[in-house]
Image (cartoon, rainbow, N blue to C red; front, side, top):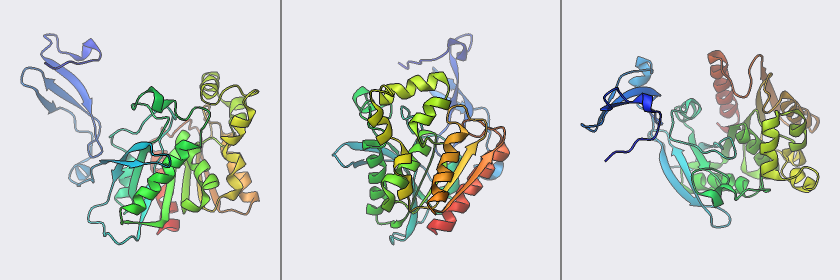
Length: 314
């Protein structure tokens, strides 16, 4: 017997059909009708343009690897078609937001843009992610940018171990906590990364407390503790402590009206790296908040990301 959890209104009046949405790494988000008795689903909307529908897209693969302390990490891996196994190809590590979130097998425009241009992409669900039990979710408590960063580093090592990827051509990119992880990575583990693209990430947990919205302030405290009593924890977890060690060229993308990770965070990143003589560029999107809602800005951000990685990884 099939069991469905959701809104009762998604069922037909007779309860024999169910309206649902479905997407994957190769299929856009569309509506389907599921026939309960026949155990069959029929697609009723087709949001992808015709040219995209006809273009084969590389499917995601679930892979696992051991991190520095033996913890098993699950990740999604996307590889370009017909990739030559010569150890000379570029790779990208894609940390997710949160940290209490996870990467799912969804239609990801950034992943598709990267893989279609020859990049192998790995998206690890590092410690602190949801979906792997409460102990795993709490494994990065007061250790942000510690064990979870090493899980990202070992994702880069996994790419190299496949025999396809050049260890000197690995980049990292992410938004929000993924942006924070990008900053921690290039500063704290500088030798691993050849380029980075950071989107609306945190550089200093103390300045975040001053400018972020009240709900996010409480979330931050739940991860790092009391900002007075646990000051050393906040400082150790802030990329600002390590950023001048960065070797990888960094592109920063930021919405000007972001109330979750305010513009001040990006401005600090750019100022620190410029003053240290590092390679850095930035683009601010007027009217955008935490993430980019306007289609033209979404396209622009992807183009800037691709151009940056092409310049420094290829």
